[in-house]
Amino acid sequence: MIAAGGKKAHVSIKNLLLRGFYSGSALGLALCLALTIMHQTGLPWIGSLIFPFGFASIVLFGMELVTGNFALLPMAVWAGKTTWGKTFRNWMWVWIGNFLGTGLVGILFAISLTSGGTADLATGTGDWVAVANKIIGLNKANTIVKYQNLGALGFFLAFLRGLIANWLVCLGVTLALVSKSVPGKILACWLPITAFQALGMEHIVVNMFLHTTGPLLGSGVSLGTVVFWNYLPVTAGNIVGGMVFIGMLFYSTHRSTMSDVLPPVHDEKLERELAAELGAR
Image (cartoon, rainbow, N blue to C red; front, side):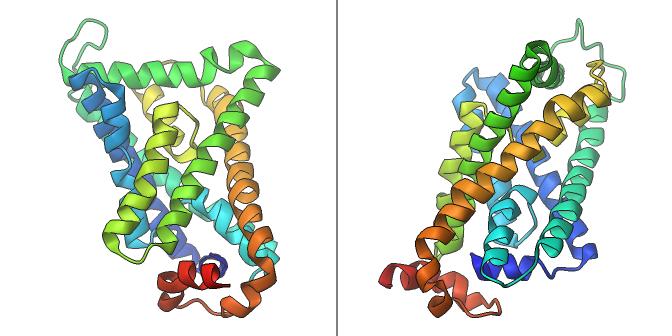
């Protein structure tokens, strides 16, 4: 985990943006599929079970997701493998890349779901109209109804749900890192991601898609409302959930032996043997 974080700290801005773009677009596509399946089956848990395929592809392809980096890079800082400056640089550019990816998917789906703006979302029928209205509803609910209307309590609740979400997401990232096989990595990250989705917690990259696409579909939610009542508290909660409840916890319990286990430079062999080495010590 430390070596993986150290490697990420030295990725070029171009690659942070490209890999972040892929990750954002993958989650946007996965969420659209999940919402469609929820509507078609009437079973929300089926959508939650399908949704993690986007995360699995990010893990397998070595892409950049800002929420996973909230756990990995601080561990590298504490171990002396990188600096806070490089950590914040990574977080900023990956966040932007994730946003661009979700934004493009949001634009494409807003055009597709409304048949190029010709569909009447108020009276229309069919899967596309239903999914569009679901996105609008989530955009309103996860900014105004659940948070803005509750004032300071709402801001705290958005933070808290962001914390829980990324605790689970980073657990999935960690499990995938220590798995030695492709099927193992997929299964390892699948269950925690299913859990956060089924529980209705707040993940900033997933929210980027919802709160970009919702206004494009005509929800009427303003950019200021989205930023203050969702993006800010959820990003902060995601940072705490990943950095404290996964990064700090794992670093604290293994730090006495990490210097003997982890080399200063990342290599592929480390990711394959990390679990066995830490367990043996």
